[in-house]
Image (cartoon, rainbow, N blue to C red; front, side, top):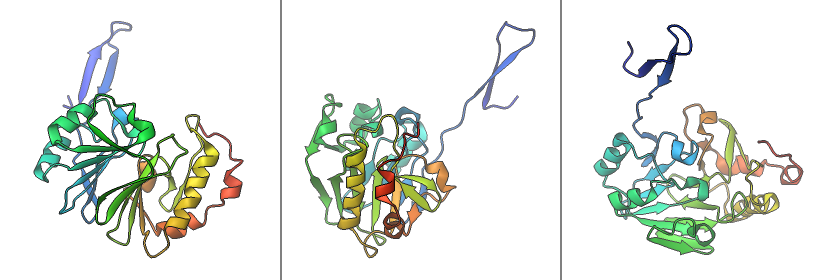
Length: 242
C-alpha cells in the first residue's frame, strides 16, 4: 500500500474503499534570487505566501503554511522580522502562532486590522516603509484594505496578493469575483500602479493566488509592460467570474 494513501472500508458497499490523499508538505522553493514561494496554503484558500531574504530583516508576505517543513525552513533562514499582509484573504487562523514562533511584526492596512484583534500589529493608512528598498502601500478594491508590497531589488518586484492575479504564464489582470469589495476602486488602484512605476523599476509581479497558471515559473516577468497592455475601460464592464 502507498504510504500517502489512507484506505478505509466505508461499509456502504462490499469492499468499497475510500481513498484519502495525504499529500506531504512541500519545501518552499526559490523563484528569484532571495525570494522563496511557499506551497499554496489551504488556510488561506490556496493563497501563496512569499519570503524575501534581506540583511535588514526577512519579510514574509501573507501567512505561510504552518507545517513542520515550512516552519523548519523559516527557522533555518533566520525567521522573519516582518509579516506583511496584502489582504484579508492572506490571513490564516494560525497567524497568532506564526507571530509567536517567529517574533515578527505584523504589518496590515488599517481597514483589515480589526480582523486580527488577538495579534500585536502595526496598522498603516496609505503606505509603510519596512527598510530602504521595501515598502507597502494601499491598493483598495479587491478588499477594503488590499495592499501591495514593493521590493526594489532585481529591477523591482511587486507582491500583489489577490489585487492582480495570473491568467496565464505571461498575463496578469485584476479579476472580478463575487467577493470583490469595489470593482471600480480596484481598477483605479491598477491605474495607480501604472503611474507609480515604469518599465525601469517594475520587472516582476508575484501574485498571492492562482499561481498554478504560472506553470512552475513562480512570477510574471516584464511586469510593467504586461500591466500597460490592460484595457482598463473594457475591464470596467467585465462580469463576475465566480
